Amino acid sequence: MKFLLVVREAYNTSVIYHNFRHACDVLQACFYFLISTGIIPPFGTQQFDARRTPSGLGSIMKPFHALVLLISALGHDVGHPGVNNMFLVRVNATVAQLYNDHSVLESFHCALYSQLLRRFWPSAGNDTAIRKLMISSILATDMTLHGQYTKQLDVFRDFWDENDRSITAWDDATLDSNRELLSCLIIKCGDICNVVCSWQ
Image (cartoon, rainbow, N blue to C red; front, side, top):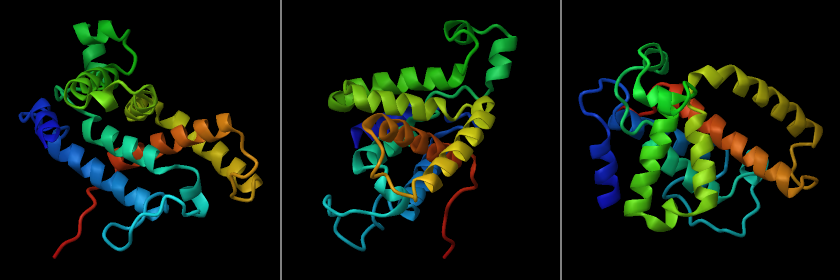
């Protein structure tokens, strides 16, 4: 709870869109997509069985990857100043210089969020596998990379169909790269979709 409160405080309340509410919206959307693809079971309807063998996309990612994706969604825009990368590059902002004008805000969010994780959740913040997947997921939210990800999705879809929608013939490297790609695609969808909600 303390970690969540600190993350909320790290978002700028004066920023109209990229604030903690947006982070919660993206978290909710990612959670919905993870359930819809069978990566995690529907909330509250059944006990999770780690021995289950889900079909489809749910067979690629494991609960670990889902957890890291949800952690990433919560902090993907932490500290957002309310301007975009292009603005920061054009005014030659210090943060743009620090990240060599490449994915400036996304790199900043990764760095800031990593420090929060290390301080309040050391086991997660110091875990190399968590950090690697978190960083790639947060960097994927850079809209200048959107075209690259749509091309990668096309390649993945063809590869998935060629393998009869099964991972049985995949080696570890193929599994890892596709798990990372799916994490990136899910957080991208969560970041650009409309708010997922139900009206009573």
